[in-house]
Image (cartoon, rainbow, N blue to C red; front, side):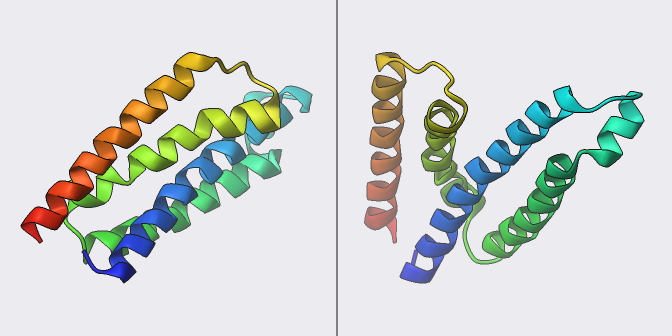
Length: 122
């Protein structure tokens, strides 16, 4: 993987938790809306934004996969997926304990092993 590919994959791994955060904002907003479900869905601006974000990130992912093998590119999602609970803790005051830190460190260790394997192969 060259530096550009690493940057693209890292950018995608950051786009994922942003999308999840937008969906959480949409869920919080949904509780404030009135009316039938369909009306709530089409008037929930954060939800529309979350879907738009995911549409853009899907195109971004497609572009990445034209350059990087799926097995390697997807490994970067480990980094992003660990950020979701951290953002939930900071932004939405959701509980988080030491198990998250330990589990995330294990995930990052796995990511490091994958990247070391890439260096040996590439």
